Image 1 (cartoon, helix red, strand yellow):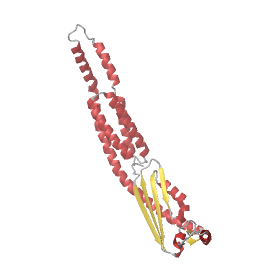
Image 2 (image 1 turned 45 degrees about the horizontal axis):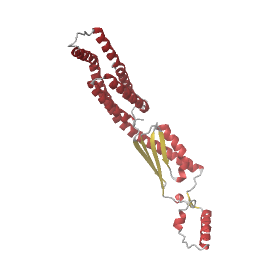
Image 3 (image 1 turned 90 degrees about the vertical axis):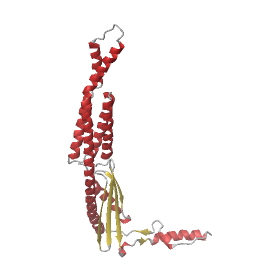
Image 4 (image 1 turned 180 degrees about the vertical axis):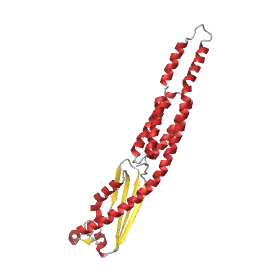
Length: 293
């Protein structure tokens, strides 16, 4: 099944002056890699968010954002007076030593440990997770919908490239049987020209042995058969129901390897041109399947 790894999904919820907004973006990656950004007081939920994303998204680079806005008094950060007093004591010692200094309350509030997020009790934690879990599922649903839509476009493009490859394979198969005959005729003519002014006769069996060696060296039937097999498997995976990104990537590597072998063995300009075209389409396949889950 062709599902793109590129997509975006979001979801939001608001109640009692508290609004939650979840956004999930994904890009292609060989493995699953999630970057999760949560408000400071909800960072304890990161392992749960990670497990939920892994359970629904096969692979890709996932960027997860949770934004929380509270219009209630409970949202206020607590000021740790003990930490403030410690900072003040340290500043007083500096001033007493003769160093002129002014103290800015706003700047002091930004010092580490002064402002602390409100702590959640167990009930509040469970309530928050229930909301976030539901929003995550909604956002992932929208993300997957977008990935499937893009996957359909990739599917159509992949199959179009496969059809183009088959067209060039058929051209090679039509040309391949004539290559040996062309070589025999050219060899016979060349030898005939070289021996025209001599009394030496060319034995037919010597010519046949040379042609047989050439035919064996440039035989590409096995490579063409494997290319057809790889194409059949490729199309089957594209139309199947399982996620196929890694296997499609492997098949494109095999197709490129077989194409290179055909080009090196065929020793024919027409076949070489077709091989160049096949490799061009295989490169397109490789580029596209990098974004398939």
